[in-house]
Length: 359
Ligand code: HBI
Image (cartoon, rainbow, N blue to C red; front, side, top):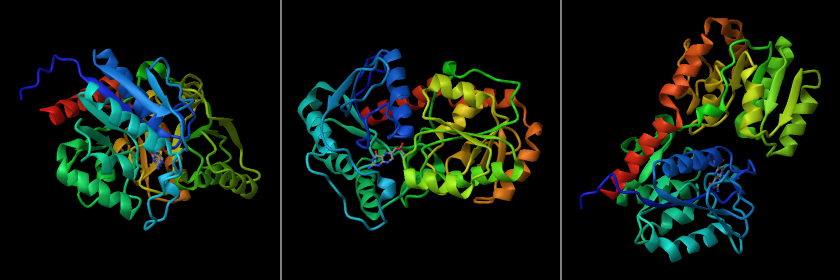
């Protein structure tokens, strides 16, 4: 069947079941869904976003579904069984998709959950899966591999290093990510402070950034949702004198205003971050990024050009890099974001993926 690429597609996006869009519980996937949806509408496609109730996504058309939220996959152990709560919002979202699938050309799954992959063979409408994290559990690895074998075009990752955490990953497309860079203002004159942005949870390694603040005395601004309260309290107790300021989970407009004033952003993941949305947000504001050489951020930061890559888990490595931060041209950071990670660049890669699946 020849696909007329001028044709507009009818797209159904199915969001993550871990929290309402806009709550911050969905982490990076919230921004990913919003940005791709916004760009597909701008390109003239028709689109609806199915998401847990109380989701808010700007002016995007949401179909709100009730039900129990899903446990976050990161909290699971490698050989944990698949857990489905009673009246699961995940199941309810996909039952809705089943009912309306005839009205759509393509369903796009953003959830890192077993069910959407398992259902791929039961739907007549093709399902595209954008994988939001690296390998976490055996059960997810197995079901993703089954779909990758049966529908090889329908699997995409954000980064090569994330794809490489799956044994079958290197045969699939990597989309990077994209951001509405018009929301981020370039700041050329930073204050003497550092920034850390992300979900506050153990896999994000915030304690290392706080340790840097305590050792160097350089103030650290912390932005993001406190997902693990106990973990946050432990850090506050352990680093009582560190010059840190928690600014909360801010909307993009305020986040970029605070972030832009930083002389560098520290990225301290303990796990293989699939991508690193916050890295792009920093670069877009002209803020160099000092990141552990681990996961998605190590694929985005050009060492010595848009920041520095550091020995993973080395606080001293972070401090050494901070001393050299003036070598980095803040304008080069902004340029890189524009070239590779604009919403347009991501839209091109994503639309190409959709046409590939449908061709
Ligand atoms: N856990 N079960 C589950 N499902 C998801 O879709 C999911 C998650 N944990 C985190 C997450 N999605 C997002 O924060 C990704 O952007 C990482």
